[in-house]
Length: 113
Image (tube, rainbow, N blue to C red; front, side, top):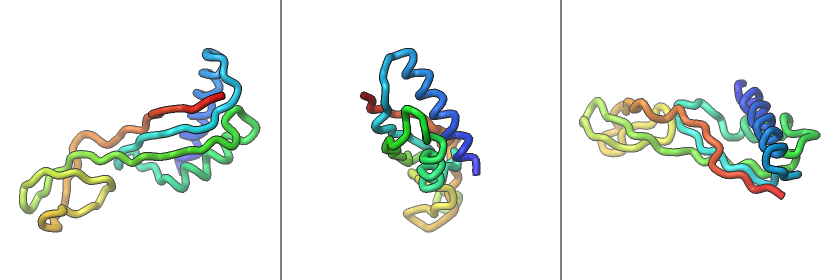
């Protein structure tokens, strides 16, 4: 479960930024993730609740937005967008091959006090 180490890194980043920018509490964090980042949203939220205990991020809302990435269908040769590994082509139910995109895991926004 790599989500815990990701959350520990996220909390460290938030604590560094709080010293730099002078905020005292994190209220909300929005992450964006692609399917190749292999982040399970529920595991990430659970891990964040553990990693943030006793920190400026304890009790903060964690929202995870899964982004769509371009994919190519091997059967009908059309391009489309998918949000998860293993999704079938919406036109022919063929196998979709993901592009180079989709490895992202970024902090989109942070709401602080």
